[in-house]
Amino acid sequence: MLVKNDSIAYEDDHLYPEVGLLNDPNGLVYFKGKYHVFYQWNPKGCTHKYKEWGHFISDDLQTWQRVEPALRPSMPDLDSAGIYSGTALVKDDRLYLFYTGNVRNAQGQSVKSTQMWAVSDDGIHFEKLGQLFPHPDGFTKDVRDPMVWQGKNGHYFLILGAQHDDQVGDIIIHESVDLTEWTFRGSLLGDQLRDIRGYMLECPDLIEVDGKQVLMFSPQGLPADLMQHRFQNIHNTGYVVGRFDEEKAYFEVQGDFYEVDDGFEFYAPQSMLAPNNRKIMWGWVGMMPPKREAEVPTIAKQNWVHTLSLPRELHLNAEHKLVQQPIAEILDPKPLTNFEDSLQPGQYTIDMSADWTLKLGRNAELKKRGSILHFERRQWESGEIGHRQMQGKVDQLLLMVDHDVIEIYTQDGLNVMTGRWFG
Ligand code: FRU
Image 1: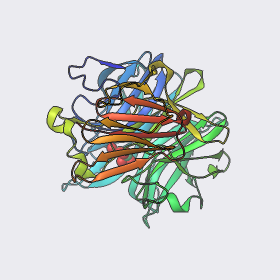
Image 2: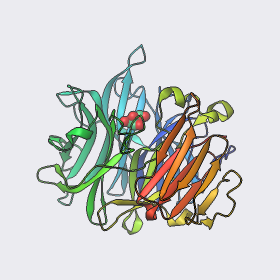
Image 3: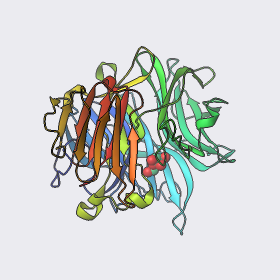
């Protein structure tokens, strides 16, 4: 991949901000012959104090162009401190964006969230349409990240990450026949998944993959399960397969909650419905403890931080588990032959017959020991070694290596680990 119009083409393959901080992918959509990737962007600094929607477009998912930001804060009591995450919907040849407006007080604390929308005819210039509906009763100000789709019955559904007044996470759902009048339908999950809601749940995404419905979301504050190597990041992202009932506006969970990615950094993914019914997902490669975030070396060197993941095509396997592969448009791996030197940017397959150790710069390495793959990294603020390992056995491997990001795919994408590595 190549980002055009860019004087600091540091990352080869991962979309990154030219300046400032990038986080969640937003509004992923194919509209009038172009792929659009919007993203959470603070162009004013490498912090989370302010957000607008940055914007990349592409004709082919290989070459991307930065265009002007799609949405910036402008409405004093609604979105003055941030255009937070959301999604896109195409209706009658127009592109609608749904997002959360954030407002901060004089001390800089977030005090209010408002669900909002905007529209465009050309996919570049957007007109804000204001607030969608009132804040629901029984929830704190932490209600955000609208995801909208049209149901089979023609109605529109809008889901949001939410925090109940008693500090428990949930996904709530609204319904509309015309996108303008919305009815609050309550919790999408009812009493299900009580143990993995955390204190807040962010960025829900409900999509259809190979005929089944898949609900992805990012719960905050799940306790780490060190024995099972689960939930080891500060916040984590997972999915459940199930069935959305349009009448009841309810998602019936039919399996377990699995993490989308077992690595150090992967969060708030969203998927695009691309031509030929392809489902392509991007995630944010950057969720990390705030103290660590401030020390990422690109900040001092080039005044930007974080990337999106590679675009990954999604399928379900025979057991109804999610499999992810880098899209065919960018995939061109070669067998790795040099195990001596630090891995160079590129795409590799690896012979898995013997054990090996591979260096990633001075501070990280991959180790194959028997059928287990370990990813170890010196955590840069403390010097302690962080460890992640693939869930399940590994007898086949694809490495997508960029200047400071690695994505590791095994078992044809059944397990994936993503992480940053530095110097
Ligand atoms: C997830 C998130 C969203 C929010 C956005 C703000 O990373 O916290 O819930 O809308 O980032 O940038």
